[in-house]
Image 1: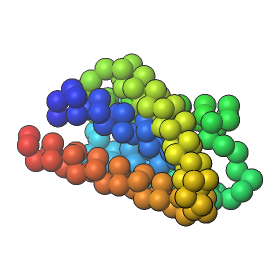
Image 2 (image 1 turned 90 degrees about the horizontal axis):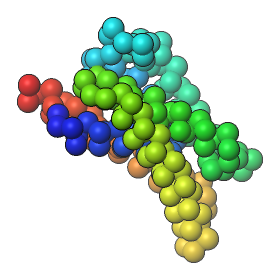
Image 3 (image 1 turned 90 degrees about the vertical axis):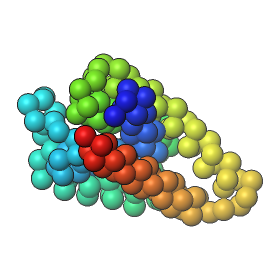
Length: 165
């Protein structure tokens, strides 16, 4: 993979974290467990363990369900935003580490993309609800589909890179 593809992957994972904080770590953990992101010998190798992959997947599904509830705070509130930044940094780090690139740059790209996507997705979701009179849970399901599509796109890119080697 080229630098652009690797750091672009970190940005996509950061953006996914901005939309659903647990989705990107769940994606990365599943990739690591399946061997698409080799993290052996690194401090974040725990992401590749089967229990980590299962736990993070359950947490991601739980977040997708909870996101539809009216009492959940906005993603741009301080603590949810901090969680998204941390998620984006972790996911970006893991992605670039597996491709032997700068983990500092991966963490920075992942965290900045998480902030941008947090605010961007919040504003888009709110605008669609207000201007098009679409109920928020419907918009949230569309956002979930976008998150899933990002995960599938990354799988496709990683498999293509693996086949090219």
